[in-house]
Image (cartoon, rainbow, N blue to C red; front, side, top):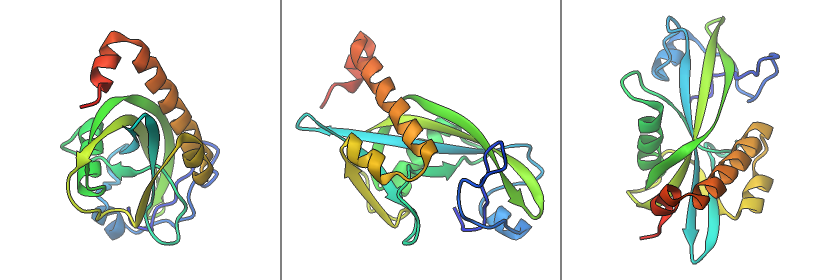
Length: 183
């Protein structure tokens, strides 16, 4: 996402340190201010290697904080498909959506007008490499505690906690065990 958005929570407090953007910048980011809502997908990706669970956190650019990956949902795709596409295109990996990890709303200012945002985060399981890393400045795998320490956003810390709880719940069901079975 370009450095032209200003995300705010429902109380109008900024979630990110970006500025508002012009109509042209919004078009470049695939935001149509005539639309009533901008949908953004978020990914909470984990991998299990030799019984060690690791969680993915990224830096979108050199000066940004560590965060969970997010991307705009294109008009012709679902939020689930956008999560899969983003991890493949930007993260250079194949990942499978396991469950929804959380939702929340916000807003951005586009050309002086407030546009509502809806975030939907998904718990995803890393499958394998799918190419080179092109969309994130940096990405790292951390154990759960390390990932939580790296994440600066209270929202991201809450989302990863919910995702971990969802993963624990999945492991208790027969269907979840089948889906989570390692190759």
